Length: 376
View 1 (cartoon, rainbow, N blue to C red):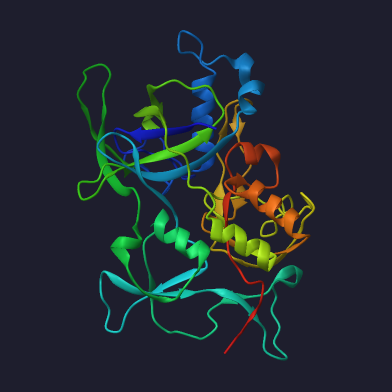
View 2 (view 1 turned 135 degrees about the vertical axis):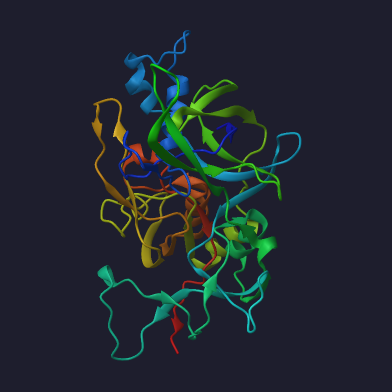
């Protein structure tokens, strides 16, 4: 499917669930990064417009079937090509302060599925194994929210502990930006006394590095354009790119086949009907039956929104955040495991078909030996 680059011209506002009304002192807060549903809705709105730029409500069922994967964060070069792909920091890593601390360097540690000591028990459901450091380390965690693909690819292929340079590993993505506004009286076109409010957005244009943008992969028929996105209908540019998301490293594919085990890393948040436990991912497919052994997952994200089709709020849902890592063992022969891995790379793994079409649960694969490590 084609890749489209969406570059905000102004700070992008992606509202969270806190109320924002016409009251003095109101603040419109933004999420730290757009949910897939925001971009899926924008893509379908673009596709569903008629010649006059008005959305044709008769095409709602049609445009809802359009598949959208993303968004992913990218850095652009001077000719608008993708210079670097960035992904959320994987949850099976821990970046710790050096001793003494250094602002640009840290120690990278692996979080791994652990074998419980004799007599120990956990309250993890379904017999899941705990994920953590095999050896305790009291140092404080830190690190960038987004990793460059090169370092991330090495982590998928051969995760190793050691000292890393944080600026070379990645950065925190779009920076928060705050603006103060005043309400304008429509009869006099002057400011209304005391009617101040604030908006918080995401600044994608950085002076110290390349421009940032969003990338989505979709089968929708789009056209290069300027169009509004997010709160306050701030403009973004849409253009098709010749760049494609990175392919699965051959070493990752070979290791998955050899070990009959893998890590599944989420690049966008995923919705699982049972909360922590995926259903669609674990269904037998291509002759392979996956078994979930452990999960490295942060606090759930909460998503809702407004249903334009029915004119009502969407149900509130809890999502496994981007960066979540699932440790799987794979039951099947070698050729079946190869086919299964090929079919899962850069695919969405949420339980519901519509969630997968909306881009929730975009995933890649990494290596794992399938063995549990002893806890010290």
